[in-house]
Image 1 (cartoon, rainbow, N blue to C red):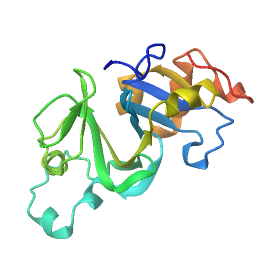
Image 2 (image 1 turned 30 degrees about the vertical axis):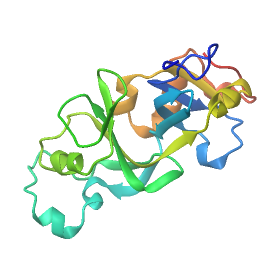
Image 3 (image 1 turned 135 degrees about the horizontal axis):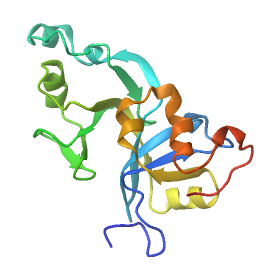
Length: 195
């Protein structure tokens, strides 16, 4: 089966995974994770609301930057996010489905995730996708691990919203993602179920 991790648990690909207020793992407290892939082998996602003290220009070495002509309309101060605790030495770009890059996973026909450096250079040159979220590291779950965590009320799930993903200030994403499912997460004190 390709679409889900089990016969009775649907795929969470292209969903937001919202940490419940009682989340015990400090790495995921108050996080919103965009699920890029979820199947019987497990799940992979990018946390979209924990900006690092890094900017787009910081991702390239000075020698690389000198080789690029950066147009004035490119936001070299675009924030970089902590995408999760796994492979924090690797970059992930969540972006609209435009352009061809060396290593890309199509999440949907509108959203992709690229891990190759060619996309960073293109963004700095003003030739990359228009809507991007750049992260270092990712969040991963083994087979059935995420399903069990959801059943133990650690997470709320809701279909991903591109406005929240690409446009909203990161400090508002956790509450806004929960509100998209009809929940005011700030009033929850104990874990609840999923939407």
